[in-house]
Length: 194
Image (cartoon, rainbow, N blue to C red; front, side):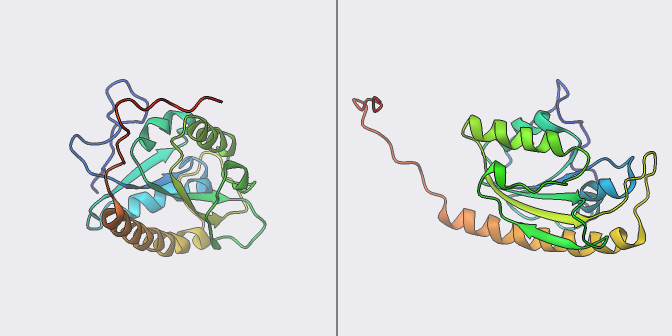
């Protein structure tokens, strides 16, 4: 299995992306693989790592990185996040949400819920919040010290991975077709005063 990001996010020698990479879309799988179904986002990324690369798209196993993932958002137009949620639906149910604001993120994301909301809030505060697309897989039981997914969640991995893959491909193509240089301000322009 090819690991596209084998360096842990936040390590001193970790690069936010490979040098020279022209990436506009990040597929970010999060979760704790040591807690059973809670690690489904990471399992979806691992599933996609053996598939052909999509130009302009990067896969990232975010684990339970929380705010340490902030540097990964630099120059990213869109993030497709795959995560577990405890939303009361049957295990393995896949849902999609396009939150416009951090406050629109659903309650019940995986056990790292607080860290994700902090991550997106920090990104919004510094003006670097990419367009966010969230795919969740419903889970009901978190099993500490278990690396296996339940049968219902295993069955959800291929469809959520391929749905995210197709979505990323479309986003990357649309970003490539609409990318233009930012307008340049005249050299004598002054920022507006409030």
